[in-house]
Length: 248
Ligand SMILES: Nc1ncnc2c1ncn2[C@@H]1O[C@H](COP(=O)(O)OP(=O)(O)OP(=O)(O)O)[C@@H](O)[C@H]1O
Ligand SMILES: [Mg+2]
Image (cartoon, rainbow, N blue to C red; front, side, top):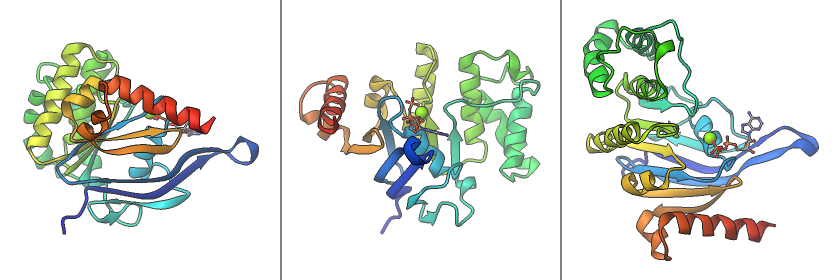
């Protein structure tokens, strides 16, 4: 049997306590196969970033389990197999792009030689060769996003987790990131990403998950989701409204 890339089982997470307790995730169960591009959709505050932070073990779950490539998250060293782009990527402004990638590579325990070998290809692929020796503090939003992608890929991980990789980008920037995701899929990588941009989800994903108020409303093929009628936007809005109405 082929091991799933990501397996989330009955995941529960709350923030705060007492009357201020907020149940961010309710028994979330989700499986993502190896080599798949999976889009995670949901309105603001639905629990997408929380799920992703739990996968990276930046947060601890209250209940349930998370496995990446068959290894339990938290029990085994797994981060070297994952590339991660945060919703709000952080950079040291005084470092150059090249120094930033060197730091990321070192933090992923890569030997210097391996980093030096991979660096030119990654800079080229992210259209950052000319800016490689400029300080990141002066980078535009799109350049920072591309550098964030390069950071996520420096150690050549098998599973890529991107939290809103296209957010805030102009059409050219979005096109570049979309092209990159398509290329990564061709290379056999697994890509799990959240996005609000439904047309991008439609263009890229094999399967999608729809989450609302911490509850998974749908997971499966994009075609099956759309078969119920309407375009993705219409269908997404009606599923969320239906769930909100039922829960109200
Ligand atoms: N560190 C935290 N402390 C308290 N509450 C939190 C924390 N992180 C998330 N939450 C709450 O958990 C819920 C889910 O938030 P999350 O950031 O996962 O949503 P999201 O789907 O990523 O939304 P967006 O599309 O706006 O990025 C929200 O109600 C949020 O307020
Ligand atoms: Mg988020």
